[in-house]
Amino acid sequence: QKEVEQNSGPLSVPEGAIASLNCTYSDRGSQSFFWYRQYSGKSPELIMFIYSNGDKEDGRFTAQLNKASQYVSLLIRDSQPSDSATYLCAVNVYGNKLVFGAGTILRVKS
Amino acid sequence: EAQVTQNPRYLITVTGKKLTVTCSQNMNHEYMSWYRQDPGLGLRQIYYSMNVEVTDKGDVPEGYKVSRKEKRNFPLILESPSPNQTSLYFCASSLAGSTGELFFGEGSRLTVL
Image (spheres, each protein chain N blue to C red):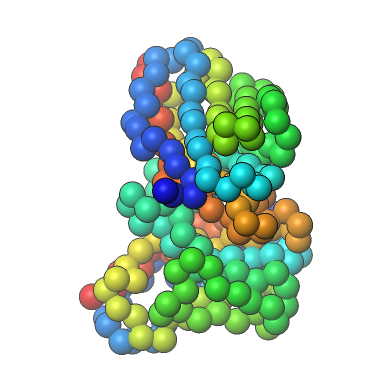
């Protein structure tokens, strides 16, 4: 089992819809969770982090964490074509080791 | 402007010819790390450094060396590159204690023939 798993996609949503991206992790002791966005040909950039169970909102983005079920998700409301990118989930496992998922490709169709 | 700078951005080399990819950050970050990104495999950590003179192996350190003599610089050295090291390389940095809140460089695309 991979330490951090994501559906590779692509996930296609129409403009204005909610995009839901999911990530599961294997280490029950993980405490820190991150979402990065990577445009084609560019470097990853941090868009959200969450440390506590529940929801964390920042503009159109909401990160959701459920430690009991070992999943973290990212919701993008009112999706725009500019949100089309690969979204990488990253989790601190076994202490300070940061492990990335392989990423989910999101396509927002106008 | 806060940034992580990598050089070269693109490089084509031949098997066995030593090369160094430089990485420099201007944010006074303690933590620096190197990743390689390959299709379907995501970002995999090569080496990381918690501070000056402190380095440690990541998940895929074979064939690579690093050094951290100054806080701002963290070069990646390929002593004898092989074709399986053809990849996209990213350097990243963060404040100590926030090793998941990374700032990435623009990436270095390396091809080893």
